[in-house]
Length: 112
Length: 111
Image (cartoon, rainbow over all chains, first blue to last red; front, side):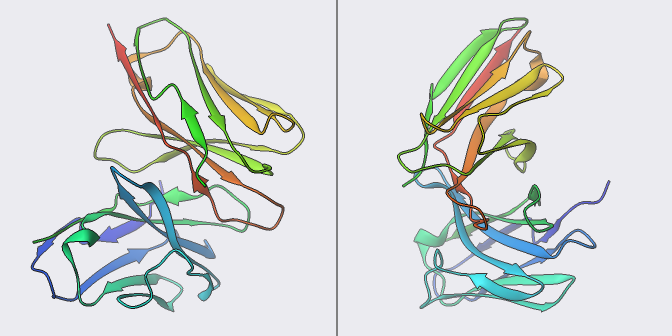
């Protein structure tokens, strides 16, 4: 079965460090989403792309977060500088236009 | 504002039925249902579109009431594998793919 692949699966780092999370969408999917999941806020959409172009990043703190798609097989989410409140599970999902979203296994991020 | 799901949590014995509700304060265009097991990714179950349709998937089905701005997920003759947290994700209009996920319902099935 085709899967969305996220790396790393776990990341522990100190406050102030840069964090980069990567996502390989399912081959052929042209839409990529980034979500953050916490106990308090649940699943929140941070940003999404269609054909590598950003369509919406209104859910993302602009001062420290950035999302890009350097090519069709790679999406990245960066946090610089990281803060303890960024600790969460970050999910990437991919799909075709207006079709179900398929989630990766997530990156569990802890900022000390 | 995120959809509200009820109940927040439910414990059932294997074989019993469950209903999970998802209510929105905004008009709904589509509702997507997902199940997430602890420490795993959300897994897609089904999509319902505006029009009040009902869909089925083995012993799991769902309905969508546009007037009430509500969707319900029905699990019949529950199995142990149905345990997990169920989320509804809603969009408010055609062309909008931004899912706003609900508060989640934790379902525990015991033997």
